[in-house]
Amino acid sequence: MQGGKLIVFSAPSGSGKTTIVRHLLAQPELKLDFSISATSREPRGGEVNGKDYYFLSLADFKKKIKNDEFLEWEEVYRDNFYGTLKTEVERIWAAGKNVIFDIDVVGGLDIKHIYPEQTLAVFVKPPSIEELKIRLKKRKTESDDKINMRVAKASIELATAPQFDFIIENNNLQTALNEAYDLVSTFVKAEKNDQ
Image (cartoon, rainbow, N blue to C red; front, top):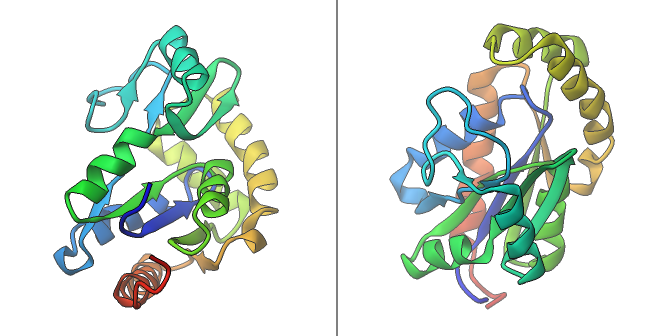
């Protein structure tokens, strides 16, 4: 696979990475398109297949793993798979755009490992684990058990931050948005000497 650039945003759930990614997608000069992940989990309220995720059955997901159709994939929770289909990246590159990912830390680092020169990997860090818990509770989309699972996972994810190219600390959303824009803008405008 050859093509444009890959911009990875990874973070613990509730860090604000989705807000940052949406902001960047709204900047036409960056020529970004969103990589829609595949998942074996059920859609949450209002989520649309092919827009928010490609919702696959567990059997379909496992079949695609076996057929080597994923760029990266991970079993995030038991029988809860997430991954990036190779066809998704090819679709975006064929349209002449750069791919932006809102993705789990393991998947983000996998992509960086596969395409080290073409990938900008950014870790979004929450101000604290406590703040993260508050943000997750405010969403009102998950049970306390699920929130506690995410918070426990966040501690492990935070330990991977130094493996990313850049860390954005999301204490102030506007500052984080500006920082993300500057990083991505510089990266996509850089000479494509890696092609």
